[in-house]
Length: 306
Image (cartoon, rainbow, N blue to C red):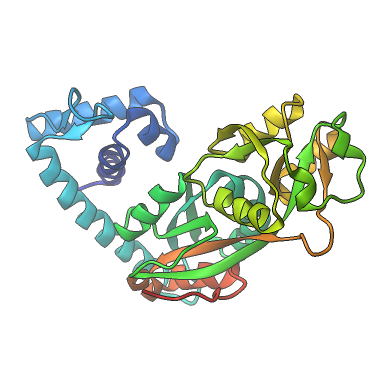
């Protein structure tokens, strides 16, 4: 019968197959890449065959036929183990168990911690396993049960998923202290016409939100560079290479330190970025998931369900 170490190793193997990367599997499990390699070799010795083909696929990591069999069986085993863990922990009055949460960086670094800390204090038997992913990966991982809950910006309805409102973040203009707009008390979206702008990559939902607001205001910014995360955008804006629009909560430290200036939008141009929890409908039956959702959400956002 599998012991605790084997359960953890099987989870690591599943993460390796799904991430198609030793480094990303290591990040998800808070271990080194060498630890991932060592556990993989231990599995291969135990089963007497190769489980990963390291020379195929874009990421260089794909399961062999035996590895695919192990992956499919391990996923079933891990689901049963999580269900048993929750059942035993919840046999008394206090809710317990493990919740696997995948979040985009901006929410995980800024909006989530103030909400997560009191939740964990109130539910000491609940263990939250947090990992950072890109938006599309989060949708996929929620659907295939790799995680229990996803947190994304600008959530969209998808078949089989329930979506709950996590937060609504005020969007503000950010610029370096020496930028001409830094002295403004507020700024209109139309004032950004022709201004050098640091934006998000095309596949980031926040970019679509910002572009829609700029288009409505008749402003065409001069897009100079794009990135997939707010932290990099902040760094580029700090050195004076342009302005950007980000959630106010993500730049409070930089504003306090004088590295960035945050300028609110004028009345009529203000807008919010919604963030939401994604939960597979079948997972809402777990009491620990229900408790987490109830504690973290502001309610269910209006949406058209497919």
